[in-house]
Length: 254
Image (tube, rainbow, N blue to C red; front, side, top):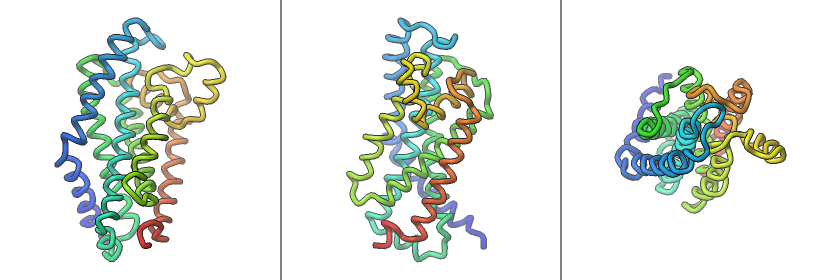
């Protein structure tokens, strides 16, 4: 059976939802990014000098872009799917002849669309401060797409388990944001003491940011293949878990 109509209906609904309220979804990351580049890149970066042979401003650009992609692909799915539960639209999806994988793919692609659009906005802002040319287009696009997919899936799982609007802000505030800041956005792994280097290597976001940095400016602290394998492994695991949650009706049929 062809489920393309169902898939594109969910996807267009998601895209229309965040583009309709663009002052709340696309404008804030542009302002925040400009402040990051002004404060960390210009005011502090000029005193730091170079990192791995590139200016500090160039070094932080990939991390800031991917950090925005992570937070917005996650927040788009968690807020949208939880609102569907809260407003009882989920019943319409559950009784419709639409497979669970189509529902999951529609919401995840909506998160990828917002993450990608925010990434483009942040990249455009970064060009005002640092005229970076992409060194490896394939790696850059692949890492951006895989990372957005991974965190869109994570946002979906958060929404399934959430019982209130407070629950959908706990993970982003207390887990996602700290891990992003500690994932090497503003520093190289080599700048940390040995103990903190070992601890930092347990942070999966470190691998994604460094792989994206390699794609943009050709610099990385980690093995690129390991970063791809780790991200793909998480995507497979979270996809299977999400489909199992939908199949069992956890958080949506009680």
